[in-house]
Length: 441
Image (tube, rainbow, N blue to C red; front, side):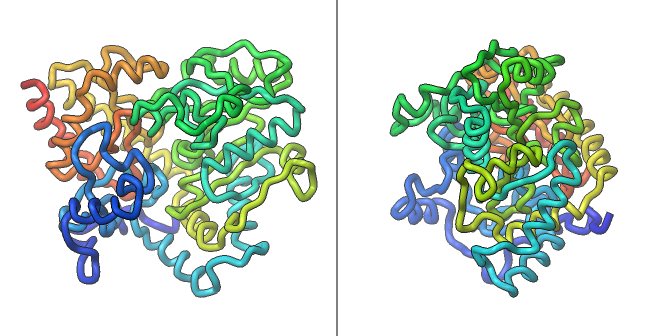
């Protein structure tokens, strides 16, 4: 393993420093609101579902971020899962600096995209080729278009609470920020855009027919809290798709190379026809990818009739960062992180349980969820009921006051990664015990 996670563990006061932006969080948000809708570039960052005003990050290192007022937070957001190694991880920073000196974008093939594609194909069983795009949203759009082009069908089946980006046809029944803001989908999406989208309950195998082009699913749902697949669900989807002649698409924008070394396939043993990747494969820079068998992927232009393009697709900075992140840790490191996070989740559940409120802390690999529910959440209805208790917001703010940054939404997950130490986990659990006493009162 060429990079030791301990090497990037943050030191008190290490992040921030001379040259960092200063001022108050409120001032920066007000200033941003004059030129950016809501003052944020993505709605869930606005704190609308938890109340209050967001902190504005000036810098980060390892497991920590520092806001413009100099407050330091142990960060479990980690750019919503994009930073596997932690913020400003030396292997990633070095790779980006080296790549930037050679040029930031060319609009031409580069060795970097070939190397990253080879790494993805090597690690994901059944994935033979990938096409790079600039975001997870684009990856899902491309996967759906490819599925429709291959099958000659239009209908797409998705699951309530699963989020596949903000394209018109996939917003229906979405989790993540759509659920956070209480939106049924989005204004501006015409009925015709979702006329061919069918929303089914998660963890229930739907009936498919000859009109269905594909079924797209988060194999481990992480946009309605963390909802693992029930036994037989993913196998059932595979069988139903095979019987109907539809393609099965795994949206692994979150789980890809975070859930395990080889992604969800390594854990569940079910092989989709197409994959959507993002986040981790960019090392913290904007990137996405769609992957699949060579036969399917060659239907994309220029070899096939399904068109997809992007000026910044395969950007050399993003591919360099992603390759550095993926190569920094091996399969044994993933297993060790999963074991450590499993112990952390158990201790966190015990701590929060002292509040007297029923709570679930599901874990899948290094992904952790928090849901105030009496029983494990298995679908979007359960996730919404847990969010409706109103207990997540006071938990969030009480932890934030103590320097622990959770996601500002009950529908998101915690992203402990290789920069988080056991001491970080112990501190989080100890502070959660304090907060549980407050929630009990």
